[in-house]
Amino acid sequence: MKVIVAEHSGICFGVKRALDTVYSESKKCETLCTLGPLIHNPQVVESLRKEGVGVADKVADAKGAIVMPSHGVAREVIDEALSLGLKVIDATCPFVSNVHEKVRRLARSGYEVVIVGDSGHSEVKAIKSAAGDNAVVLESAEEASKGDWNGKMVGIVSQTTQTPACFAAVVAVIAAQATETLAYNTICYATHRRQSAARELAPKVDAVVVVGGRNSANTNRLAEICAETGVPTYHIEKAEELDPAKLAGAKVVGLTAGASTPDWIINEVKTALESM
Ligand code: SF4
Image (cartoon, rainbow, N blue to C red; front, top):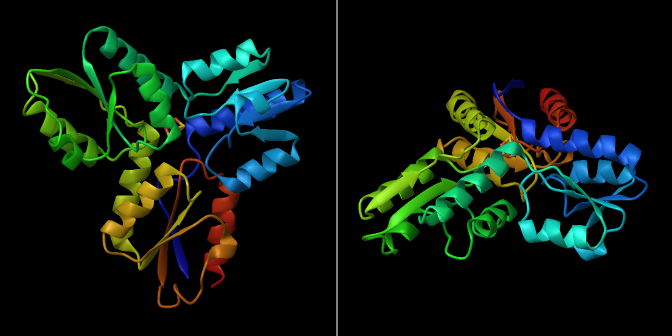
């Protein structure tokens, strides 16, 4: 089986930065944990555990030093950790911090803040917290069309892993009604490149394998984008999940991976596919 790896795939700048931070801090701190899984990838979390880095579900469970995840946390969470005497290591990706800064500025300037994203995702919850009480989260243009934007000043940002199409559709609905709309496309370049590369690759292959955590928003989007092209798409977390029966008729398989999937997992999947 021939395997074509997407031009842009796998671990991104922000996740690499967070991982490097944790590995280097694990050598300096006696007790270190991350608040929740550092990234949405169970294999990486397990490898960190072997290095002695634990996972605290909540700040109160942590001891020593605590690492805030790359997708960011609410300011109150950092304040709570500091008040408990913990050393706080903030691994928030600079692209996410930039969104926090933008929504704070929008809210201060009197805009009603709209975040285009998944309301249940931790990144979105943290952005909402930075924006203050009046911010709303919209997942689609359909949701936007149910709101009343007439006469309002609306400031719009997006979750860093949104698709440009969804963001643009929400902005169009609001801009058609609001008195003033200020929209910042805050989809990060890593997401944009991975999505474009997947969209380009999918129509050229017989099937696509997308590697990454099932709870990883950006990996799920890559799988959606590939599936939308009509090509059979399989989302897996590791090589052992490959099903040879499903790929039996495929001569050329495309391979892409979410922004929290390290190279070693992608290589394992590639090797397994090539041996089929
Ligand atoms: S996907 Fe983008 S925003 Fe998220 S951690 Fe990676 S570089 Fe940062």
